Length: 525
Image (tube, rainbow, N blue to C red; front, side, top):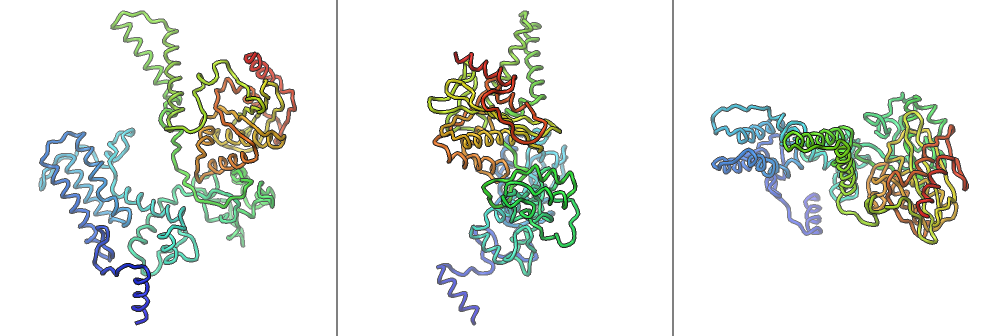
């Protein structure tokens, strides 16, 4: 009786009605027992009706492809995002779509000339991009699991946590006693997250050293150094110095193998002390796709071959004599167009940014009156660490200072370029500059700063730190430039001092950098 009264009070308080056991909600059964027939019948009936209506129509292969992708593959999306579909029934759905694709008549056997697994490959790999029903089911459930991890304060995550993992995290949760089929489905898809889920280190308090994936450069992110007795609950925060900015070298040498200790040193610690967070390590960087892929060595080779083939046809069929120098210039023009396209690949831009050839027709330009201009660059060489360079000049092109900072770490070029920006701003802050124009030749970093991109990875945390530092200045203007017009910072970044740390040039730069600065000054005059 007490349970009934409590239920009635809950219904009255929320203003909802009690749902009968076998009633459906949004087309799905509210309860799924041991038998999944009620669930599979819904999917089979919906897909069968659609395919049956298409069979009588004369459709080309392209038309069938569009229908399969837009309708047949999308019909079970909502169901698959809630429940784990049995593998044998996924094969039934695949067979239904396969028969439609190959034009098999109902009740008759036909020939499938290519395996369905081959058709499910991306078009760039020789397939047609059809979805594998079982893999797509795991992906949708994995997305729900991802929401439980990154949005723990939303209503449904709080309900799941109160019911199944009240004293822990989702990644450590058990199936539990008498779980719902939705919960069991999401837990079964947790292996999808485990492939790419990593911990981004902030203050280190929320991450265990052993048992959680947080080491960058490792295939699975886990620590492989042996865990000593009593260290099972050691936190990453225990490996960080009290100031929160540096790794404790004694702790790294004590707990980890040498190569793994170096991997940990490669993880940059934020001075702002943010909390640890989960991020997806397999996320594709859109700034490196599209035209950026085209400009790789394979792309350049293909462009060169195409240009040569084009001019060869003019000679063979039109009798036109072609100057070889013009062919070379044609290839360079196409590559330059690709660079411009890559600059606009991310869609609309906010803030101040122009194309390099339009922005600086005469070379390097100085800062406005009352401001300084800081050019930054990074140098990354295997086995020699990472070095950053920054040079500060006034509105008349005079050098105020230059720095080179060398670190014994291994960072990707984009990350190193962002570190160069941070180094330049920190030096400007220490010297009391209030109005700054900061210029870099790394378009990805400038775009991220202009658009104030948010994310969960280490690069996004670094961008947040840079933007946070900007609050200490009266104004900071971001500018992208070409490598030619960034030659002074480039020279400083490649000085490569023999020892780690910062080297400062108060006003006179090294000979190579000084020559580049004098050349920039001559173009101004």
